[in-house]
Length: 242
Image (cartoon, rainbow, N blue to C red):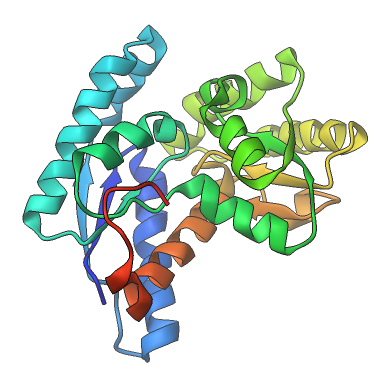
């Protein structure tokens, strides 16, 4: 198994889920004593969150590039950015290292396309829902039509992520709020819903949605294991996102 480098701590709640999912997946594939070979660089999310809301994407990019280089120097053979939002700087991170970055949007979109779906609702931080780095990749690389919630619903989804989920709080009222947002996305034509923030899986399950949900955290971890265990990846070109 190749060494998986995890850029995490954004927040540690979802990074802990990545570690569990990678090891559960490795055990399922390799046997009862199998586990994932991985390295974790964990940020203080308080610093990251402050820079996000200040709009300092250049400062965030510098930190992400530094983390990626440190993981590569430590022996990582592929990279995961353990958050959807910070894939905003995925091209810069990939360009700074010589090992492949497994992109969370690709891992998710491939499953959606394989399921024969084309119109998806997207839940995530305001940055992910409103900026084009994520929606544009789903649209341009995979031909998906992406629907995001209306402004008031986007504010609710974002607030719950930052005020509750990153702090480990799972509130029944917030689950009800997400269910209502999902219902409105479905009414707008969504055939499926992407949980496009790695903490949302703490709150939302398939029972909360009348259409299929795609948990980016679980799909990203599974794609990383596919890459880490794939013989073919030895011959893949370096220095590209995907």
